Length: 108
Image (cartoon, rainbow, N blue to C red; front, side, top):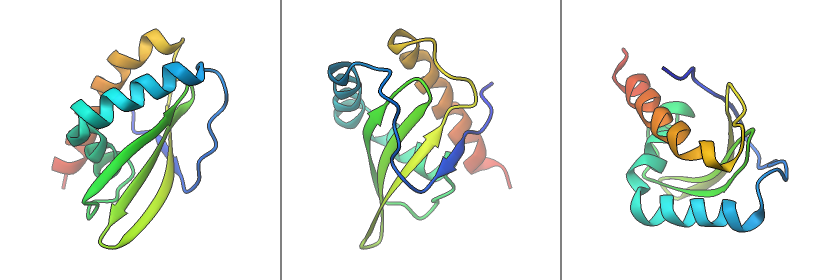
């Protein structure tokens, strides 16, 4: 089980993933798993009224999202509780975060 990450209202990604790796992960998540990206915003960041979200960057320390609530767009940073060991660890961590987000949304 993954602990809930900390959220900050700005994009401040350290440069520890190669740019092309971060871009590839973001493209894949936004194209194939947009529902998961929205769950990150709703469950992990507590933006329950969010209607859309895109993953803009990911690194060992966290991920940057742009989130839409009604007509407002907000950039947020979700910090990971435990830093990733590298890009190869991103897949499993992102899957774990989907489960954590779902649990946050179903917990009263």
